[in-house]
Image (cartoon, rainbow, N blue to C red; front, side, top):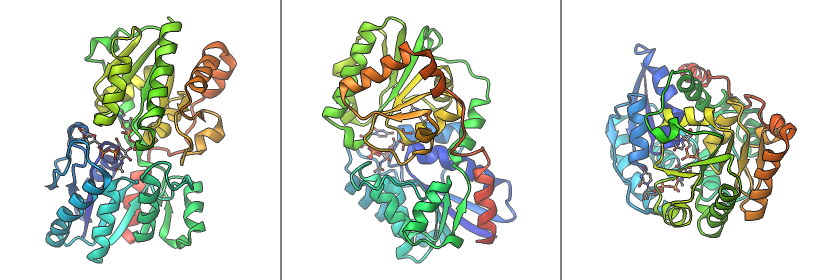
Length: 366
Ligand code: UD1
Ligand code: UDP
């Protein structure tokens, strides 16, 4: 029996680890899976825990309003020390590139516990983009013992950094496991605004720290202009709970006709809203992975992406955060049907829905 401690803290980690936790549950005679949430996020994490019926064994409840990465890191490290000492697991599993990912890896290293890193190997090569995630994931790679990479490119990134090939396992991204399961459910929107959407739905999300200030303002001003000049579109924008995001978005966009500002949506309505969308504008990592599987074009409002596979396949485009460039790119898709069609092919560069199965199988022998 292997004791595995799964540590996570934010919405995207929870979505991407839910399939892995479920998979461990199929083999109670081989694995004891213990879950610990730092709760770096609170409401947005709890939404996912409820949906996937995960009841954490430990909850550090660290989130503070407007926290800095340093505050979250220190609080997570302090809490994790005791959990690790008490649980004495053989391995700690972490996901992605958040503050929780780094804290959980570092705390495990200090106690000489083996570390498995899911979604390893993503890189932009740019230290400050995304900030601080690019450094979080690089550091995590050098703390980890097993690396579960979603794509061949991610594996190559690790090989270039000197990580040993026999410690790298190509699995696909578990987000596709979660997505396919939830997208396959019958769902009817409870929010009448979502039920009654007509026309071309543009779904927007934005929360990256490097976009705070002018870049996020530019995005909002571009959306306002598009909404005012194009009757055929309806913009739906679930606004991230980070106060830095809310304080920019609401004053600029609240009350603009054709723009619906919402609270962050639960994963199930969000997935069904992606399915209903005509176009997605986002700086999110997870959404860049999900949208191609649903055949939805993505305009990425960032300088660079660590997920170039969909860009190379032609279904995602990195457009930056200049107001006029954002408007031009939306106009191009509105005006040229053939460009839109090319960007809306369904492709699956990030996984086939069986990543969790491969990860758990590898952990049996790791
Ligand atoms: C973090 C991750 C980022 C991920 C994002 C997902 C790091 C360094 N970054 O972003 O990679 O893409 O989460 O959304 O870990 N808040 C709430 N309730 C919540 C969640 C957040 O009120 O459920 C507010 C709080 O005021 C909190 C703030 O948002 O202080 C920022 O949360 P935080 O986890 O620090 O966000 P990021 O670091 O920006
Ligand atoms: N998501 C959600 N509700 C929302 C916005 C996003 O459930 O209102 C989901 C989305 O489908 C994806 C994940 O949250 O799986 C992405 O989270 P986020 O963009 O916060 O973080 P990132 O992926 O950039 O780390």
